[in-house]
Image (cartoon, rainbow, N blue to C red; front, top):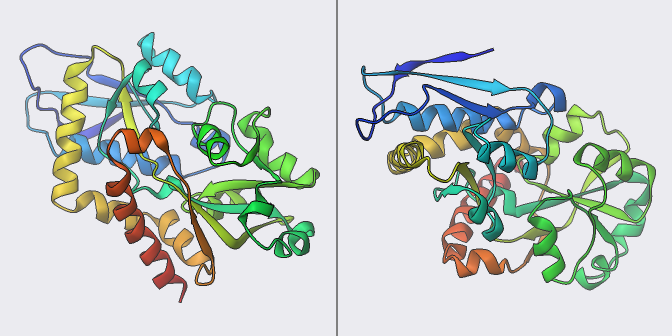
Length: 293
C-alpha cells in the first residue's frame, strides 16, 4: 500500500526525482515495531522541507531481506532509501546522510541471555571472562567487526530470524541488543526463557544513518536538510524520546548497577564522530537511568 504524506515536497533544483519514495519495512513480518521510529523520522525530515509545489508518496515494501540485500536493491533503484548502522564499507556502496537518527542508542548494547544460564553469567568476574563466550550477531552487521576488533568471540553464521531461537535452545551464547530494541523484541517473541543480563552493558560509538543511491543527490540533500532542521529545532530529539517503544525500553530495565564497558569503533573514530556520539549516548543513558528509578 502507498501512503501519501500530508505535505508537499520542496525541490532543491528544477530537475525532479520520483514522487514515490520506496523503502523496506518488515515491521509486521518481523513482529517488531522498532522500524516504525525510522519511518517517523523519514516523515519528519520531509515535513521540514515542504511547501505546496509537489506531492510525495512513501511506499513501504513489506519483505524480509538482509541489510546487504537492501544495498543491492538500493543500487538497482528498487528502493530509494534505507536506514542502518553506518560503516565505511557501506558508505562505499551508497550515499550516507550524515545525521545520527537514533542518538547513538544502537551502540548501547544490553546483553540478552537464557534465564537458565543466569547463575553462570552472574559468576563472571570481569569482561575478559565474558569475551570467552560467543556473542550472537547478524551475518552482515557492522557489530561483528566492532566486537571482534575488541577481542570478543562472535557467532554470525545464523540468519537474523534464527538468533533468538538459537539463544533459547543452545547454551553459552549472549545476544547484544540496542537499548531501544531489547524490551520490544522480548515482548514480541514472547521470550519467557530469556532475560536482559545487566551486569555489563557494551557501549561503542555507532550511528544509524539514512542511505540513498549514489547519484541521487537531490534526495540526499533534501533529507540532510530536513534532518538538520529537525535536529536544530529539537523535534528529532522529542520524537526519539517520546516514541512509545523507546519510553518503555528506558524504564524496562534497572541499569543503575550496570558496568558500562566502552569499546572502540575505529571506523567511527576515523570519521571524527566518536565524541559527538558519546555525548548523545550520555543523554540516552541518563534518561534510561532516570526513568528506571
